Image 1 (tube, helix red, strand yellow):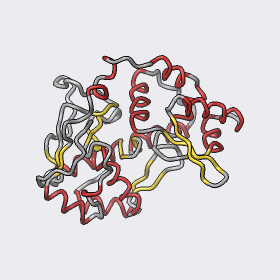
Image 2 (cartoon, one colour):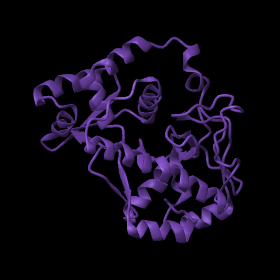
Image 3 (cartoon, one colour):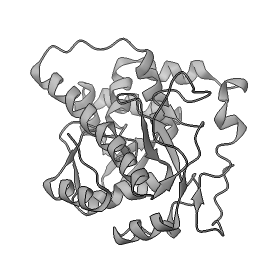
Image 4 (cartoon, helix red, strand yellow):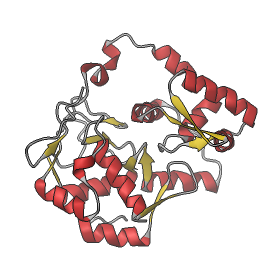
Length: 272
């Protein structure tokens, strides 16, 4: 398992990374066919895509995303829960569903790389596709142009060290688009801790049961964006500050005017 203990040095690092099984799951006995069968149904695939931003949603909303009735959605959701791709939580009279974890979202992103694109037949679909490229969630952290620009700002201001955030396919050993990265090791510096503290991010209180610092190779930008515990906590803080807001479509994120000024002032981040 990753080393999640508090480091004694002023640097916070990604540590030893994922376990052998997590890093190379195809070398182990895993029931790929079962997971693939659950995702293969078009309605279930649309439900999973609707949950890919990490939020918990009620069955009624997911039925709308999938274009199916409530009763049919309940059947599909029960199968996804049984298959451990989705979890369910009771909130009063309603049940809320969310992906089991970021690995499910990463798997969906990876499948999207080899899946044929859906035909864009309306202005609404075109606008949503452009919005996803501009700024989106990758489970619980930021991706797209905004996520990559944020990573670049963290590196240029010395918050993180270890690489330059550029994905070079010709030099990559294990890194692939739409997947967690492994070829680079990023560290949080002492200066970075102080800068993030000014934003209200306490780096001593990152989620304990996940790597503190990870990165993904962004599928649309083919550069690194910040993931892991730090990526999740920083993203959550940007929502609290109202620097980013959820869009109307699943996963779409909008940078607010306040966020545009704030990110430029603190991290030199500009989004064109």
